Image 1 (cartoon, rainbow, N blue to C red):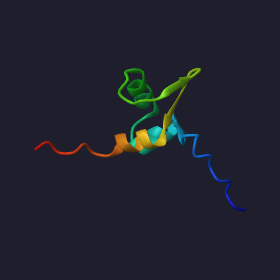
Image 2 (cartoon, one colour):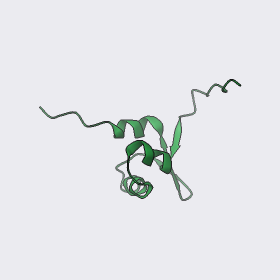
Image 3 (tube, rainbow, N blue to C red):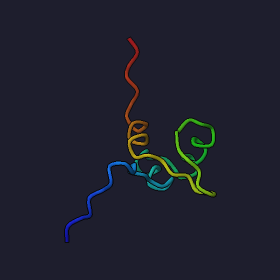
Image 4 (cartoon, rainbow, N blue to C red):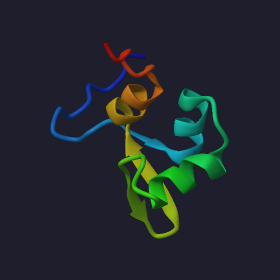
Length: 66
């Protein structure tokens, strides 16, 4: 069965649990970073959601200073 194409206007979102897996940290650490503004996300009720591209960018090592 073919996958339904995504609407390009709707961002690819991940949960705090999925973000934790991508970042290699605990879900609690993700929630803490989000509440401190260190990881850009949105709180929906008591749940944090994040754009996948933001989480993947945070998972990349920072460029070395010259």
